[in-house]
Length: 22
Image 1 (tube, rainbow, N blue to C red):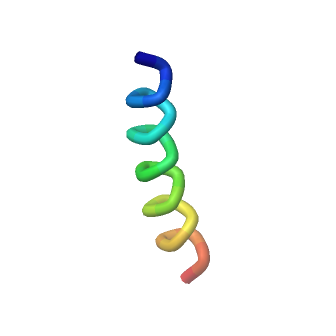
Image 2 (spheres, helix red, strand yellow; image 1 turned 90 degrees about the horizontal axis):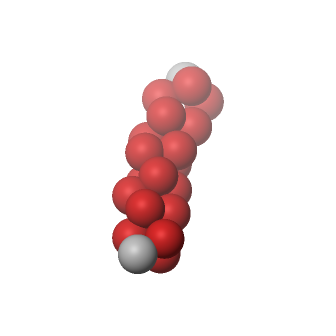
């Protein structure tokens, strides 16, 4: 169960990091 949450959170973090990298 935690794996799913971590995967979802990781995906959001990646998108935010890419947006902030601008």
